Image 1 (cartoon, rainbow, N blue to C red):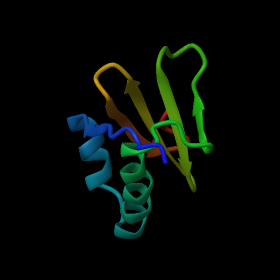
Image 2: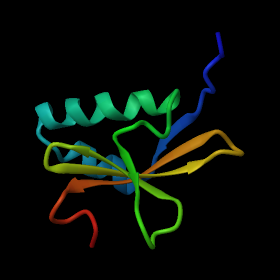
Image 3: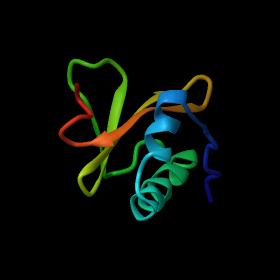
Image 4: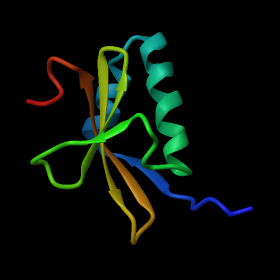
Length: 89
């Protein structure tokens, strides 16, 4: 059995503010998608954004979680959490 690599998940202050301003049900759904990134930063449901460097996206209903993966440091940084209409601006 292969041991999973443990990544540290950190939220930028702007991303934390985005999450804090969400309704409780949405906040819970977002959090349930962020926690598993510690063991698998590239789940099947993620997509790498074109033209944005090393930024990945996870869909959670009408919301998107944008994050960067730093493999050498074993770190995942949540950059932004927002509604799909606003997240790519």
